[in-house]
Image (cartoon, rainbow, N blue to C red; front, side, top):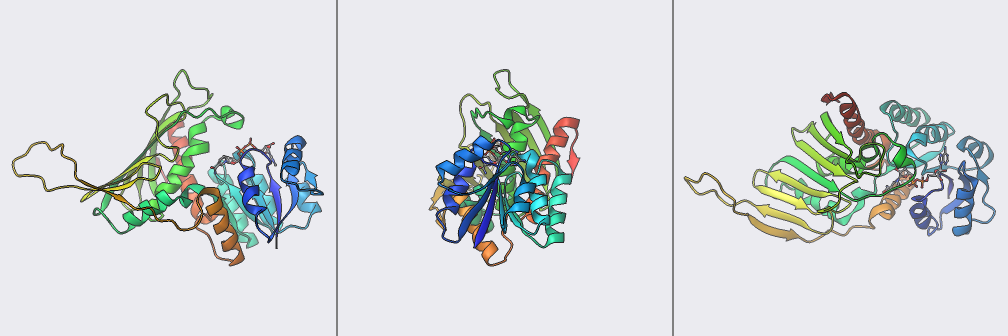
Length: 340
Ligand SMILES: NC(=O)c1ccc[n+]([C@@H]2O[C@H](COP(=O)([O-])OP(=O)(O)OC[C@H]3O[C@@H](n4cnc5c(N)ncnc54)[C@H](O)[C@@H]3O)[C@@H](O)[C@H]2O)c1
């Protein structure tokens, strides 16, 4: 039986409750939130009669018998919640990002190693049919060897709350999804360098930068570029971004919705200086394995924990996605290319 403490009773936790409460091997044994009304709200909504509420994770860990923590607190609280839970002998499923500094992330990995307990991260975007299909095509070199990946994620995103207080809201709260997906698509490649320039247009609703352009060199020789915005007014992309992989034999694209497309370049005629011609475009049928998004990731987490196998978003892997995001923050602040 999974006896779960839920720490952080805000917006996203609804998706976690929906999944967990539909299972017959789950019991929610405590809710934690410094704002009692937030915890009360979820207690009522999810009919958790009799479930105790605590203001801190420390009190919950002392007072209830549990073996698993759901961490759905804001990023600045992740280290405290995760490390204290692991050290108390509980496994942890955490919302992204794993932590808000590389030091905090390393402390989490160390606590996992020393306690022998698992900490995995909600990277729900790995669990989309579009991205699974795109990955399978890339893995089999469907249009030849890849050499350059680019992704645009241009959104009109009007969040409120902790994101408005952040220095780097787009980078710290959103870009981790894209960087983690890029690593997934490229066979878990890691970045070796990062350069990032941020911007915040006058109409932005964010105090920190709502836009960023990033360039990475990956350890498999690939170049990855990311252009992101939460203050885009038009010509927006899917919230999953619009992807293009340049390959020796053409290009593979994913529009962030359903469309995975292979475009095979045609031979270039002799004596031609400039060729605008499109290649042969072919849409790929989507693979459908398991559920998508939060449900897919939670299903995998429960199954990995039950089988005591590491999942793909275990903190030991996820720290490399986080390192990309934090290197971009450092580069944006210093104006320099950062080595990882
Ligand atoms: N994977 C996704 O697609 C996705 C989507 C949205 C949010 N998130 C992530 O989920 C996390 C929470 O985001 P949200 O939108 O639900 O935020 P939110 O502001 O709606 O909720 C956060 C809750 O945590 C509580 N809290 C603050 N400090 C706490 C502490 N020390 N212990 C316990 N509770 C504490 C707050 O009072 C609040 O109720 C963030 O890390 C965010 O990046 C992920």
